[in-house]
Length: 349
Image (tube, rainbow, N blue to C red):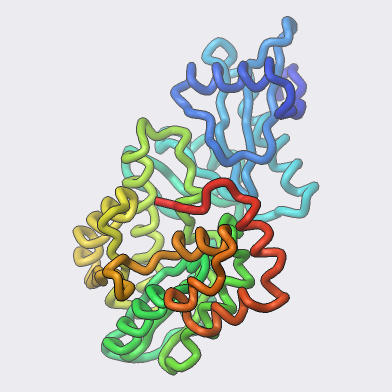
């Protein structure tokens, strides 16, 4: 243990926030945009010499000044963050770290899930957490020669999503649909899951899954130790691929379906990596062209959210299944609509 105490950094404390950012940059880390708690250790002159943060159930942006390394400060920061998470009822914790730091965090009680060589290691604080998750999935396995999977955020569920699911279900004996369960979207997970299931209820060969904490959305994948945005996308795609391969083994999946988005840099890089690397594991990567409106414009959840934001609810009728429209036209959607209308930018690229 070090001789320094750890305390919370308040977002309104501009001096402390600036020091945190300066320390992170000095140690080769960018301050992540997704943080909900930050702590720091101060020297006798009230300068920040160590810091760490949380976002949801993940520990992030941890650094110790090079002038104070070897004093046990990182151990103190991690202990403080873990205690903070426990106090707010979060016991299953995750972290992403550089490959050369994985052993250190392993000594602090974190276990490797997967790693991308020379990029990132994904870790958790449960020895058998991922193994238990895979075992639970294996219990839902269905036999078939052609077994496919797709991952949907569905924010909200559109005719484009429905087309993708119908195509995958029609071309395979079994389709495993994973619905992103992180609540990082304008439409809450519980609503998104209901709309996906309602909009695909006519398909009888689907097995539905919550993604849980192991399939991470691009909205919350950390960017703080990657050199640029493209490196972040590549790391996320490669990590997702490593996790997915293990899921595929548990469920006998031999194809993954993804939607094409020619205007999206993120999806373009993601799909390229998937199409290159999934076949190495005996898994076909099927990239499906987007469904279009009669005007030729692709059907987009972003356009649906924009229409809702602008109060043009009737205009989404041609973009979403009846079950999605009926939800937004009913009283249950009032809070979701209020949230969408209160958001400055609802278009995601």
